[in-house]
Image (cartoon, rainbow, N blue to C red; front, side, top):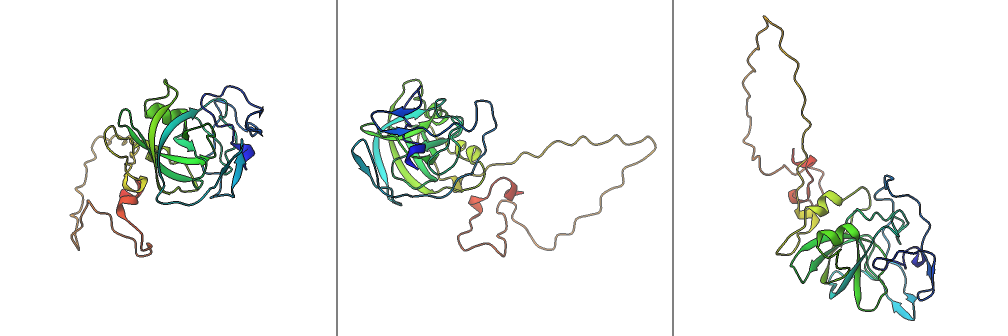
Length: 245
């Protein structure tokens, strides 16, 4: 599905067939301001492909680590299909990479200012010389290089990404100013409970004291219990806010 994403170049303001790369941007499915669906794609590695005379070899490489130049892309591709069938949202924390599995999580560290962030790779690109990754405009803003256009970064593979749903809140919580961004599974997102207004007590009615609570066993409130049906890889650190209550 190279046709869908090969034009992921920094600050590209035009669409259509690119004479240098010989590919065409995918059709726009959503307009700016529309709600962009999340997690609509598939897990995909892909076969070797050639762009502008260069052969790229997609693969699962858990030891992947590379230093190079990062660029970013935004409104020209907002609402278009990515290489694994998701919809590109320039306001999500996503990225394009030439060879890593889709979708996957990678740690991107700005080597100039030390900022580090986990991003979701769900697209192919960039194909410009010496560039190792293309970030969404939001991810570039969080790493503080959007206004410059490019930055020297380190990219490190972390894990496969989940297929369904949005992971933007969890990924935003991985941002670190000085130090490596933690894997998403190590970040806990507290879910705020909605405030419920209690009805007033009628005059003449008194509150009855609540019955005493009988504790059969001591419970450690800091560590959630592991479900009996949980897989061997279960870790309390991987729970979201809902799982912590």
